[in-house]
Length: 637
Image (cartoon, rainbow, N blue to C red; front, side, top):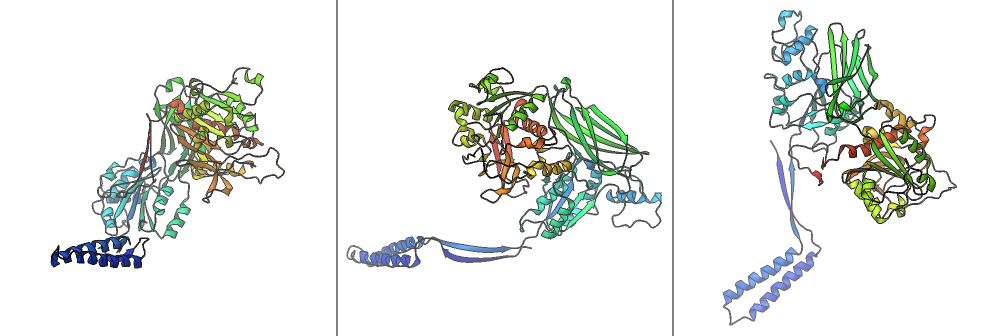
């Protein structure tokens, strides 16, 4: 039952003072009476009274309206808070667990309705207590669906009696379901490639107090391999928001456990280039057996490894293979990594699938600089050694003889669209915008808008300071002011280390180690840098991947050091510092070359594969049924 109390209050919101409105109303009445008194003889007395009353009332109403009267209603409504029912729909839910003990078989029988759910476990169990028809190895998802559809348990109906149930499933992210229908239960298919259980539940806890669920009912096998936060963080947040969390575990507790935690594979694979696939997994209760790890590309096995099984929470193996030209013809295809554990007569299997594309062409990169800075020197060597890249270079202030010596150098910056548009990525450093004609500046802007990649490495002299007010500035994902720095500075700035943002943690551009956990340890250990170009703010729809640990924007947010956005069809990246060469200290190209090669692929590879003609995004990652949202669409001809 909903209780509603309603109050109405008359308020005046106009700039016109009340006393003046009253005075005007009184004067209007007096003037009206005076005018109609002069009509004596021409109109009858009743007619003059009627007309005078109407006109006086009209003028009084006009004076009243000048006050902008508003009738305010204050309503108070009590409505029940929702119950969030969240069901795991990731690939691990397709694992078929053998039911070895009597207790496990009994629980399966209860889930499938062969035994009353309120019947206790027999004190002296026997095989005859398990009815026929109970599956020996049901999948975890099938058990969850059986519980949700149990005719006697009526889980959803019981929850609805407490508060309206808001169902959803999760894998990489949480997906809301229609609470008015139960068809979503049968539609669960366990195809989500990764499990971000904690992050999915945090989405529910980020709401305001009026939308916060009264409780969360979680149905899962307990797998977690994609969240940025831990289960401890989730428990603290539930306690802080006072939202109880109830977990319904599915799967076998008496059998050994297998879980693929993470598989690192790029979205784009290159022909004749060695692909390394790090696989992180956990195994419990299977010591003494064998583990077989295999990689399938387009239904064909391309790599396999067999090792002795050992219990562990963070086991890691790396498989490698070399894509061949015949893999290109298949276009976009699925790469599946599977881990099988053979322990006695039992077999455990877990899989992760991802869509990739194999290409047989190099990324064409044009690197343009003013003078050969340290980053340029080492970047040049790294790109020339990369078999997946075809690089060209031009220095506006370089040695004219060297620039005319032929590939990989150019004698001049491209002057025509075909000359520039043959590249996939333009890397522009500390370049003076005045070195380019207005037509060339617009050509660069069009190059990005029509699908080319753009990467700008900030410098102290010209770029990006000279970009302000030119078409080059349109491409940048950040807003800046023109700032120039002295070549020699008496004071040494305080060093700092860039910090990863949540987007940076997920971005393949900033993965300096195949192991995500180790990658988080690498960044705080990198050599410090001493300079960065100041940023005013991010442009709309831009993402920050690295931020300054101390410097802030006007709104108090950390200052971006590496940001990117889509400009038209192309992807533009801004790097606010030019000291990545320091990362080579004691490590050579281990981190430096990996960072820049990944940046080249992220910004340049989309051009080689063709650009999307549509880009769609929502105003929230957590849309709710029945609540208005906004869909942003970018459509290109």
